[in-house]
Length: 343
Image (cartoon, rainbow, N blue to C red; front, side, top):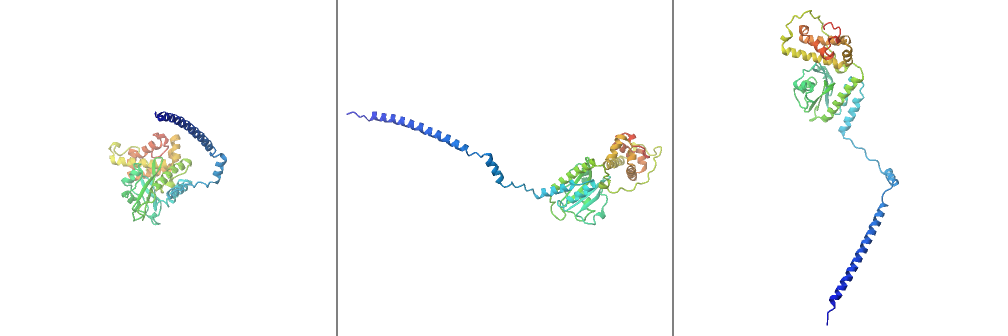
């Protein structure tokens, strides 16, 4: 008798294949329908404008950024100096604004190339009585000439400035130049006093830069004489002697080179002081002439300072002061100086 199981097995395999194919197609169809239904349901979960507006009204306000203590102090200092109405007022406000940034500070105005104490805070009431001109050391000279942005270590320059104010030298110091029209007009000294470190030297520098910008803004926006704000009272003029008709000294070429260099340097400083303190008069003289009638007293006083240092004969024979004035303040046009008796 024959075995029928192989034929039956083939039929069963064929039926199973058909059934598995149908089940797979149904499963895929159900899956596609479910996916489409799920996507449709998800679209109803998108928030509308009314919901977003309600959430915005109900949500608490976002907290404002919390500035650091240093930022708060700098902001208060800037607010203080920005309200200055004159250059003198600006310098007074600068020292006041430095109170939370540096334990001690002193402002020195440059006059004829030397720092003179203008005002101080933190050094005591006796400091002003000791004030006087400070011969600049090489480090201070670099600051004045714009060769370095600051002095951040104890040095002979710091000692020279602080010694008239106090016998105590602090552990941490900073000296910054105040500039006007790219020229240094003052030096600001700050130190840590009894503290081991200055609390905010970088904020002090930022305040100095802002003060320099405001100094230029005040000078451009208002015709005022900064002499009272940026200089100590100048010395009384010395008697001015009339220049002889003919030179009595040796020719200019025989003047000692070191003496000539020092005389030219002082003449430039004196001319730069006049340009700094009296910009309106200098500008008028450059365009219309007559510098001497506009600044008679100041020019006589500056020439007297030059003559006191180098002698009448040197100026009469080499005309270093007069030539420098004409070059720097009159655009090399001698006629714009006006009727100066010593020209």
